[in-house]
Image (cartoon, rainbow, N blue to C red; front, side, top):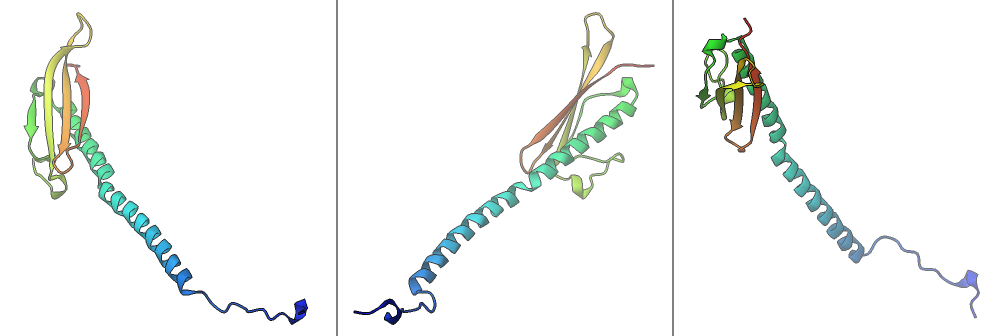
Length: 139
């Protein structure tokens, strides 16, 4: 009978081929999942920038309308968003602006005001933002 000190223990000197294959499969599955998440996020990453740009365009148009004399505020559509000089910079291509002006009373019997709706839409993703305000003749 062999005693414990006499038992020859076989020491492992590396990893087997099965362990290597299993680790490669696990690594491939995790990398595939990670890449699909990154790809999806990259496709959606431009949307917040476009949303912020639409709000900035609407606010710029609103500032221009506030500076316009009350009697001269009318509805219009810009197929391409324009700067204050009427030019369409490359950064504003793909944005459409629709300004709708209607006469509206805020309270019954109150002074008539102009309701100004500014709708900015982007042709690339179909999103749109709208700003609504009222303007009175405050002479």
